[in-house]
Image 1: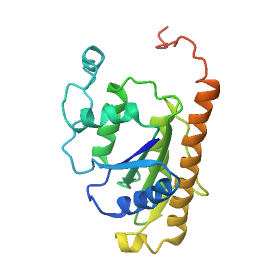
Image 2: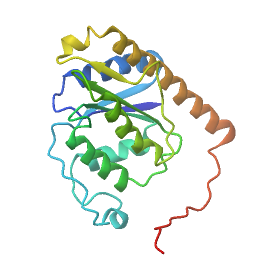
Image 3: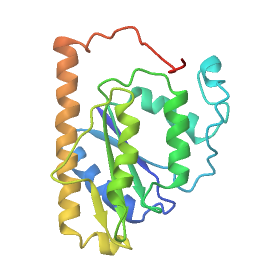
Image 4: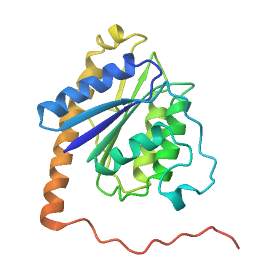
Length: 205
């Protein structure tokens, strides 16, 4: 069992990384393999809706999105971490997630998702909501904690003083490990839920 942790901060070892590392420790303690992937400082362009990915099976822009995509197919869960920029996620991360989720057509049903946000002071809740929408559109259950998954601080050292925030991260790690294991057992015993043929409507009158 493996969980990918996506660091969407431009700072490789900054506040967001500090939060993700706290989650990672608990996942590892509970027997879940992890990998932190740093994307926040990459040159990532947004999706141009060309549709080429539907023909060739990957994004036409061959960058870190295509590098990570096979890992998403194989993983059992994903945690997205971002700093707060104007009450929303880092733009690079959003470009990454848009293209990753659009171009990777694997069945993500019952892969566990979670988001982690970091702010000096405000904007965490709106950023948290923004990131969770990637999971709910593709059938990924969301792992929760004892509070919304956020830490506060302007430096990693300040984040380490956010005792409640760090506890939230540890609880998230434990809960996610439990869910990943539970889904694996459920698949083995019951299989995935039956799916209907997808209906798509464009609301044209």
